[in-house]
Image 1 (spheres, rainbow, N blue to C red):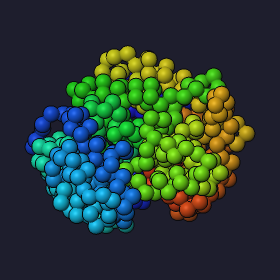
Image 2: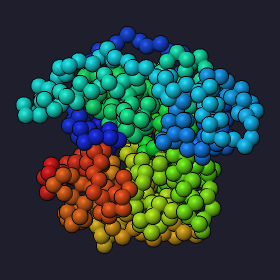
Image 3: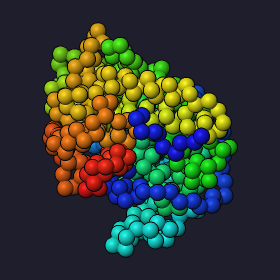
Image 4: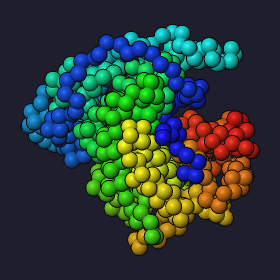
Length: 504
């Protein structure tokens, strides 16, 4: 028996994403793109990391020298020569280093950021997708304008990336990918979930499948999907939504069993990463959290900002601050009062001490989805159903606040004891568990909906990320489209009195 959605009980970066996530359509695939080996060259990436990642003396000098307004600009610049030669040339520079010397060095040995990607016009794009016939006439011009953006966001890596992967931070991609735009020249993990859903709505099945296949390649190489398609992202991930992407493409391809069978072991490997490398004991339960203690340097793409944050945390080791900043980036919520010890200052960030509702809810959905995938292929899905049941019990035992009628993040102390992470509600308390298929353990749906209505999160413009305004991106008054989508779908699943609230 197959289940299209988990059972009950159980960054597009623009608000435009809300319009592009309602259903899926099908289209024929274009001709097959070039297909070199399916995984990254790990040795080449290690060589690239000596220039672009934490510990690089070139990285430290350039970023501390403030050569670029945006730290990401430098780490996206391809090398003109091999990294070993660049390091030797850097070591031969006259000392003490001046910014003028550094600028000449960068100009001589690096190309412009973005020169290793090129525009790609997808064969399956059409100016008149079937979606235009299904939306209300008043919305058709807006939806059509959104559809017209797709050709401007699809990229592919140049041949130079496969020929010299050691000379750049960018991953080689076998297939086209979709970028957010602006300063972001690579694909990002959880953004791609909503990208894929939008592509499918616009009849771009082949482009959606390509985007997903690139992420499957990442798991084949690294055992996880990195935050984004750069070597400096490879040690951290983002919320695990790859299984949902695969399922969406599987259905759009007419439930292609061969496609699903090829993807399933890769998805199981990604699940094992979260299970084994992000686990934490909370009371009598094991759940997951964001971040890896081994990641202890400033983020290369935000180097100066991280150094400044660590410097302001005078009572803490810099490595501890860096690890928690990286963990927050893995959450996708970078940054939010959810992760701050005093609820306001980034210097008090403590992401790795928090057991988050949204990550564990997403993993619950992954486990239900893996079970249904296995059953669709005639295999035993019971182990993943059992894992989902155990996770639901753990979430209800650790993260459910019966008095507040919502799930809540908790903070762990050194003994594994928990306290509520913040007094005010966050949208993640509601949207992700409901989207994932979880019901309130006390069965009181009305009380949960009432708690959401009284939370201060809901406004005429949507639902804010949190109820506090700290100036951080993922706090009030900001409302992020992915969270709106999850909330609407979760409330619709509950039905009854909850559905109208989701339609506001």
